[in-house]
Length: 121
Length: 96
Length: 124
Image (cartoon, rainbow over all chains, first blue to last red; front, side, top):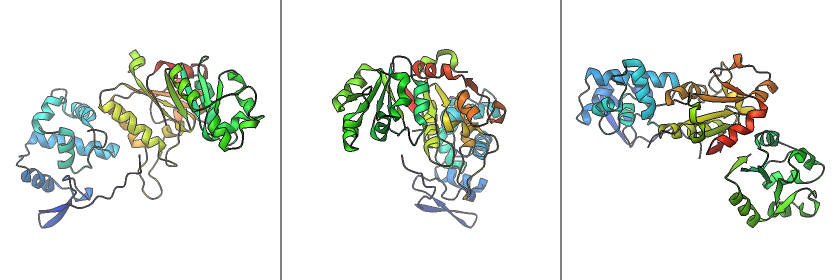
């Protein structure tokens, strides 16, 4: 294993409220401090997703997780964190799969303005 | 039954102490790379508790000019012997 | 606790202190990947590895991330079997109270059992 560099290449930009937001080749933010709720809306809109209050509460859990642990959670940890914050009904992979169908850990992290989760495929 | 591999000299690193404490009564210890410096007297005395279960790799002794100076109690094996040790044991644990 | 059947748990041995090298982080990464794939994981802090648990750690002088937030995160991956070699702790003037997480102390005489009852063992 080599030392991970935190610098990522900008692949393209997203225009949000008059600001150019740089995205890496996989659509994650290049500069994590660029994130605002409007950025999340714009990223979701590009992919044809509509963010409901149920999406937002998971995004909040993700941002809180990153603030505490400085890492984006893999699925196992995301399920547990959502369960702790929002109750056991929502802390299930089924619920998260419905909200972020392809991959809750990756899509969620992207929309929440976190780096890509490193310890999941 | 485990094969423990040590690649640091006992003269410069204390990791051998942890390796020894982690060893069960039937485990083996094989000295490789700089670990083979511990196969020469008086440094080999650090391994007196595992007499008969201490091995050193011939190739690494030879490259360091130690082949003829290896203490008698140390069992010298070549690469083939190394492979044989890994076959005899369930798995190996590296100490570095 | 995941102690119930440790014979099926993987053991990650952490023997290096934080900040000085990347060994500790790499060991933690392996533990997290194992847990992310549903493995039951035990950690053993041995030698300088016990320094990873000291309370009050911070980022590096140049703002480099520490490993202490990752240790706090282990519970989110259900990694709650944290074994600490009692001798290593005492040799460094540390006691359980000095650590940021609850741990299980392992007496020197029990250390070899930790190795023999786990498979596989990853040593960092």
